[in-house]
Image 1: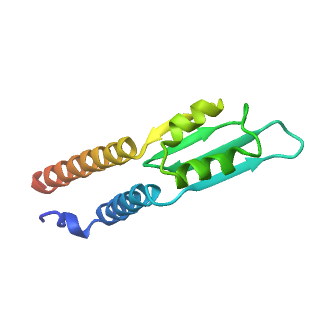
Image 2: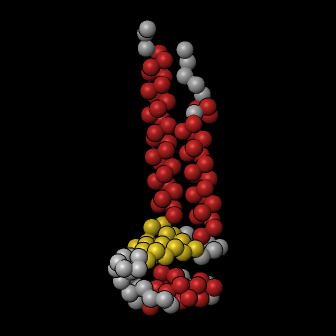
Image 3: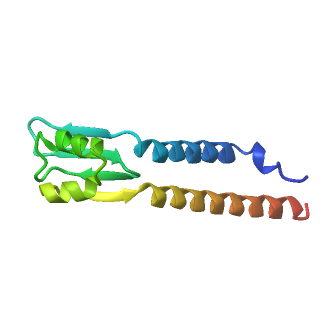
Length: 128
Protein backbone atom coordinates (compact mmCIF):
# COMPACT_ATOMS: atom_id res chain seq x y z
CA UNK A 1 0.00 0.00 0.00
CA UNK A 2 1.58 3.33 -1.00
CA UNK A 3 2.04 5.96 1.71
CA UNK A 4 -0.29 8.91 1.97
CA UNK A 5 0.72 12.04 0.04
CA UNK A 6 2.64 14.65 2.03
CA UNK A 7 -0.21 17.16 1.91
CA UNK A 8 -2.33 14.74 3.98
CA UNK A 9 0.11 14.73 6.91
CA UNK A 10 -0.74 16.72 10.03
CA UNK A 11 2.94 17.51 10.51
CA UNK A 12 3.02 19.18 7.08
CA UNK A 13 0.07 21.47 7.83
CA UNK A 14 1.24 22.25 11.36
CA UNK A 15 4.70 23.13 10.04
CA UNK A 16 3.21 25.26 7.29
CA UNK A 17 1.11 27.12 9.87
CA UNK A 18 4.18 27.76 12.06
CA UNK A 19 6.22 28.91 9.04
CA UNK A 20 3.46 31.31 7.96
CA UNK A 21 3.06 32.66 11.49
CA UNK A 22 6.80 33.22 11.92
CA UNK A 23 6.92 34.97 8.53
CA UNK A 24 4.10 37.26 9.62
CA UNK A 25 5.83 37.94 12.98
CA UNK A 26 9.06 38.75 11.16
CA UNK A 27 7.23 41.18 8.85
CA UNK A 28 5.29 42.69 11.77
CA UNK A 29 8.42 43.32 13.82
CA UNK A 30 9.56 45.89 11.25
CA UNK A 31 6.31 47.82 11.62
CA UNK A 32 5.48 47.46 15.32
CA UNK A 33 7.33 47.47 18.60
CA UNK A 34 6.23 44.71 21.01
CA UNK A 35 7.55 44.14 24.51
CA UNK A 36 6.91 41.84 27.44
CA UNK A 37 8.17 42.70 30.91
CA UNK A 38 7.90 40.16 33.74
CA UNK A 39 9.02 41.10 37.24
CA UNK A 40 8.43 39.15 40.42
CA UNK A 41 7.79 41.47 43.34
CA UNK A 42 9.82 39.72 46.03
CA UNK A 43 12.44 38.24 43.76
CA UNK A 44 15.24 39.81 41.86
CA UNK A 45 14.05 38.15 38.65
CA UNK A 46 13.25 40.46 35.77
CA UNK A 47 12.71 39.32 32.20
CA UNK A 48 12.32 41.68 29.27
CA UNK A 49 11.48 40.35 25.81
CA UNK A 50 11.28 42.86 22.99
CA UNK A 51 10.41 42.31 19.32
CA UNK A 52 11.48 45.01 16.95
CA UNK A 53 13.27 45.55 13.66
CA UNK A 54 13.39 41.90 12.61
CA UNK A 55 14.81 40.55 15.85
CA UNK A 56 13.87 39.41 19.33
CA UNK A 57 15.84 40.88 22.22
CA UNK A 58 16.14 39.21 25.63
CA UNK A 59 17.29 40.93 28.80
CA UNK A 60 17.12 39.56 32.32
CA UNK A 61 17.29 42.83 34.20
CA UNK A 62 20.69 44.24 34.94
CA UNK A 63 20.38 47.91 34.20
CA UNK A 64 17.02 48.17 32.51
CA UNK A 65 15.06 50.87 34.25
CA UNK A 66 11.55 52.24 33.87
CA UNK A 67 12.69 54.51 31.02
CA UNK A 68 13.75 51.52 28.90
CA UNK A 69 10.54 51.25 26.90
CA UNK A 70 10.07 54.99 26.61
CA UNK A 71 13.60 55.33 25.20
CA UNK A 72 13.11 52.33 22.93
CA UNK A 73 9.79 53.51 21.58
CA UNK A 74 11.17 57.00 21.01
CA UNK A 75 14.11 55.57 19.07
CA UNK A 76 11.85 53.29 17.03
CA UNK A 77 9.52 56.16 16.15
CA UNK A 78 12.48 58.25 15.00
CA UNK A 79 13.60 55.39 12.74
CA UNK A 80 16.87 54.76 14.54
CA UNK A 81 18.40 51.34 14.95
CA UNK A 82 17.31 50.14 18.39
CA UNK A 83 20.40 48.06 19.02
CA UNK A 84 22.73 51.04 18.59
CA UNK A 85 20.43 53.19 20.70
CA UNK A 86 20.32 50.63 23.51
CA UNK A 87 24.10 50.26 23.49
CA UNK A 88 24.41 54.03 23.70
CA UNK A 89 22.07 54.04 26.71
CA UNK A 90 24.04 51.21 28.39
CA UNK A 91 21.45 48.41 28.20
CA UNK A 92 22.64 44.80 27.99
CA UNK A 93 20.73 42.31 25.87
CA UNK A 94 20.88 39.19 23.69
CA UNK A 95 19.66 39.47 20.10
CA UNK A 96 18.13 36.62 18.10
CA UNK A 97 17.47 37.44 14.45
CA UNK A 98 14.14 36.36 12.97
CA UNK A 99 15.91 35.20 9.82
CA UNK A 100 17.94 32.72 11.90
CA UNK A 101 14.86 31.40 13.69
CA UNK A 102 12.88 31.10 10.44
CA UNK A 103 15.63 29.40 8.43
CA UNK A 104 16.41 27.01 11.30
CA UNK A 105 12.76 26.02 11.59
CA UNK A 106 12.29 25.55 7.84
CA UNK A 107 15.49 23.49 7.62
CA UNK A 108 14.55 21.22 10.53
CA UNK A 109 10.96 20.89 9.33
CA UNK A 110 12.09 19.96 5.81
CA UNK A 111 14.57 17.42 7.17
CA UNK A 112 11.84 15.90 9.36
CA UNK A 113 9.44 15.63 6.42
CA UNK A 114 12.14 14.11 4.19
CA UNK A 115 13.09 11.51 6.83
CA UNK A 116 9.46 10.66 7.43
CA UNK A 117 8.83 10.36 3.67
CA UNK A 118 11.79 8.01 3.26
CA UNK A 119 10.71 5.91 6.23
CA UNK A 120 7.12 5.67 4.97
CA UNK A 121 8.30 4.63 1.49
CA UNK A 122 10.67 2.05 2.93
CA UNK A 123 7.90 0.59 5.11
CA UNK A 124 5.43 0.47 2.22
CA UNK A 125 7.88 -1.21 -0.15
CA UNK A 126 9.05 -3.82 2.38
CA UNK A 127 7.87 -7.36 1.61
CA UNK A 128 5.05 -8.53 3.84
